[in-house]
Image (cartoon, rainbow, N blue to C red):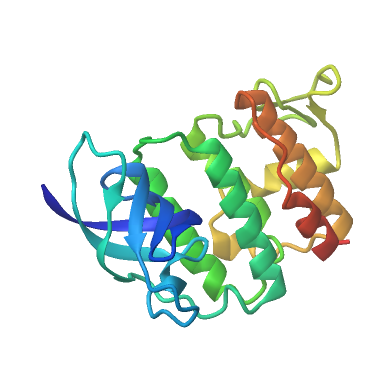
Length: 236
């Protein structure tokens, strides 16, 4: 079956001089392992398409039984102008890319998640001040993973129940004020509303650690996220 597919590049490994194995989250087919042909020359006109979080459109001859999804006539679906040149945005894309790689299962399909990821990449590329983006993005990602926080009244946030409460939950699943208040204020915000929030580097790092702990509670076997060190350095 011939299809035109849009995919977000998650991982890319050189398989041979002329082939790449590319893991993509695609709009119609979900998380797929693809095979792309490229020139061995570093200046190949198609090699740049397979950088992390690039949004690529291509044709494929889809067969359910095939191990690899073929890539034909690839081209950028959405050109990115700032990611890769801005050190803060680059650090965030490293984090986003790694987290997606270890949390999306092979063949998992979710068109709503694909649209969110595609739109969020564009938002990050266009962001005037990206400093809060990774926090906003991570909070929103939990919506598509099925455990978005419930915005009830309360001083404390229970990481296990994903809700706020006035009774202090037992450690280590309690997020206390003022950090719980920062999370509360970020819930249900669109990116233009979250972008101007004034947070210092320490608060950003603390909230990031709390959100990663939140993911670990709700996702089985979440591996170490190595790119966290890069984000901590950016906001030190």
